[in-house]
Image 1 (tube, helix red, strand yellow):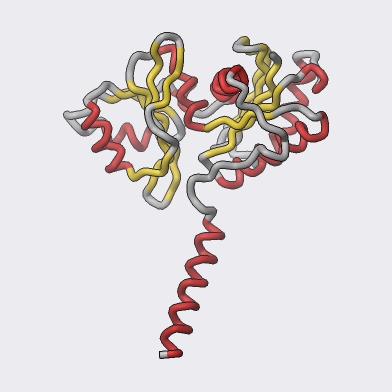
Image 2 (cartoon, helix red, strand yellow):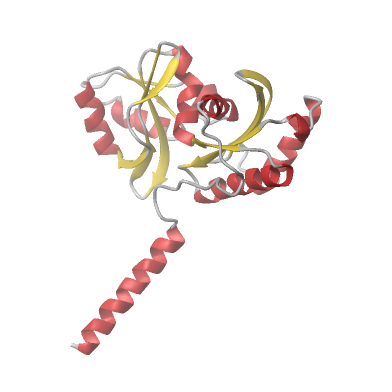
Length: 245
């Protein structure tokens, strides 16, 4: 099964081609360039270097969130466009599961992907890797750093942090005598397409593929523009109510 995977949920972006779990080609950048300018050239580059065309691709996998609203939208839109044009099935992948795969085969610690969700929150889920398989322990969620810290302390397990929120969490968590915490090596911290491809392969094996039309983002929270609009509407409704009184 040849899978083309797109990862654009954070500041970094990457794409890869895998044959089942074998990595054939990958391109990664973390230079601050917009994903709308980098994803398609990266796809073209790895397809050319692997001497493959879209006719060779069996599945399009894409990280659907959580993460950067803009990054997720760009990645999902790109995947949908390619898949729809060539009638290729899709697999939507959690950015947190993809990040967990970066380090899964290398540790027996509790795997704790963390992404900066802003507004005092992190995107997070917990995983462990046993018996050659990645096991999800919590759903993807938006959680405060303090609440996550309390949960990890209560679990009493050694923890490995991964994801773009690793450093800020490590700086906080490592101060606690109640937590045994490590940060993933710098080369494995950022989400990458290979990790997402590993999750996509297992989901595809379970038959969890969808059409291009059914591939949708998973934001966990409403985008800022929506939150601001709802706040304005609530404020206007409150003022109108006061005038009537």
